[in-house]
Image (cartoon, rainbow, N blue to C red; front, side, top):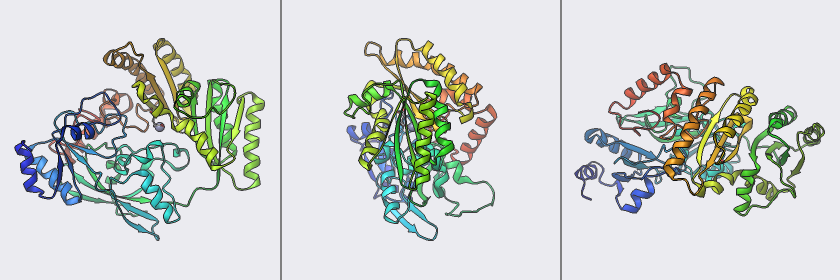
Length: 461
Ligand SMILES: O=C(O)CC[C@@H](O)C(=O)O
Ligand SMILES: [Zn+2]
């Protein structure tokens, strides 16, 4: 280890694990975006809050930028370290610290995987309902940093709703113990909520207390085939009016083709242009009748052309795979991603405009649409043709994102629904947040991170 600053860190935190091998710098310096070449100074793997504080204090002395790092499954470059930063990997801080049956809370370290949280909640007969495909590799700290959403937001809300306590080591090394698991707490600014969604720019989340809830009701999963795009929101309304929806997801035939090419089983004999996967509560005759009524109503109106309902957990998982496998199946094509949202009421008009915009803007690129349409969240993945260079491809897509950002602004939407701004979308933050809001954000950062060391260049410059 040659860098003298790291020798100083060794002295300040003698037991701290540090990695500087080229392979480690490469591995921990990137997330699921592949646009930047990793170039961190080193990787620190603290095992305690005290070690995190020691790192942050050392960074302030030596003015070293810090990148907090969880499972690095992010899609916005929020965990990329390409400028000589010290990566703080929380992967060793991955334990459940406490379960409280009276509060129905689980207190965890930030590096624990979302799936391990699900399992721990289940062991206590409860559930942590935030869920999405990266559950096995993403960490709860990263979920908090982006206020992660996923496939059950329609019923349970985003990560924010489930955090009752949070410990944050600020950019100056102070430990803040925020909200302490209280259900009611009307005592001034709720700093916990500032940390949630702050993308590691205010400090490092070092502990979280998660609210748990009753296990979900028994559910059925239905896959619907839709003849056209403009019936999508009609089908949503028909199902939402009658059923307690746990999820309502949409994808196109393009998306399905990629998942099938990755080994999934075709759901219908014929192909259809659009599909919906929906999961809803069953368990009594009234609910089952309501599901059939919703389906039949949609069939009669010609909004749905075919459907299949899960008859077993295995079949439900198979249907879910068709939706959850999309992102992974597209990854080899280096997709350019948009992750946008509008209010549900604005969805029909926004979808119509976006369809026209993208149809005109991307005549030669394959565009794959999918998303959490029941929450107003649309994912757009544009696939790179082999004969276009990475740089040209991104440059062309950025031109379209500018137009999309303007459209989002008109519809009151957001340039990032659930993936965060990171490096990828910071040029468009101003389409979603006013200048006054961004100025307040900068002011808050200045207070919590006076030397600007926490994940610099992410969210805004
Ligand atoms: O890859 C994407 O664009 C979306 C990833 C994830 O948010 C999903 O909903 O599957
Ligand atoms: Zn998503």
